[in-house]
Structure formats: structure tokens, C-alpha cells
Image 1 (cartoon, rainbow, N blue to C red):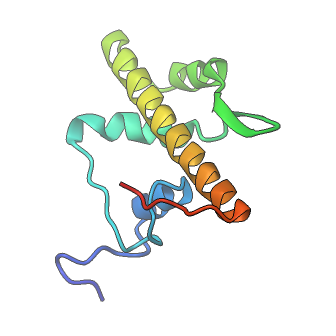
Image 2: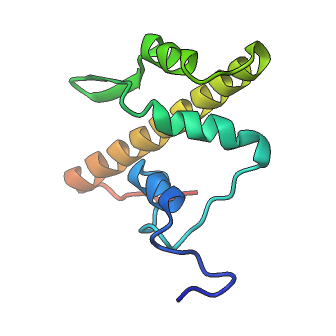
Length: 119
């Protein structure tokens, strides 16, 4: 049972954020809260997770043609579509930054170099 201020480790949002590597702790130990204005963008962000372009070094970014096709099906007004797309791009950039930091930490650890703490 979870108290009023205790996150539910089975919460889908917390699990999704952890699966993207955006949490240092396992799902359930931290909770992310969204501003109401960002809920639609976050929902669409979840919907485009199959649209990652992946190269030899890992994911390089989203396939924007696929993102646009997804957004075509979302019944968004023109201004809302722009806002949602900007939100998706912000999530994409943050995810790529976290993944790059994780790769750097893994490479440093594998080479025996000290691994700096996360700020």
C-alpha cells in the first residue's frame, strides 16, 4: 500500500520514465510530475517511441517523418500541433543527452577512469 506521498512503483508514467533512462533510481523511487499543458506532448512522446533512428553508435534521433505521420492521426489544431512537436523535440533532446551521459560514464568505468557523479 502506498501512502499519500509515496510513489506507486507500478505507476505507468514512472515506469516509462525509468525505461527511457531518465531516472538514476529504479522506477518508484522518484516521481515526475507534468504541468497540465505538457500532458498532450508527453502522451504523444510516448506514442512515437517506435520512431527512433538507430545507427552503429545507438539512437541518433527521431525519424521526423514517422513523428509527423503519428501527429497526423492525433486530431490536433495547428497551434497545438506545433506545441506538441516542440515538446516532443525537447523530450528527444533530453533523452539523447541522458543517453550520451550514460555512454560516457560506462566508457569511463570500463577504462578504469573515475566516473564523476551526476549533477
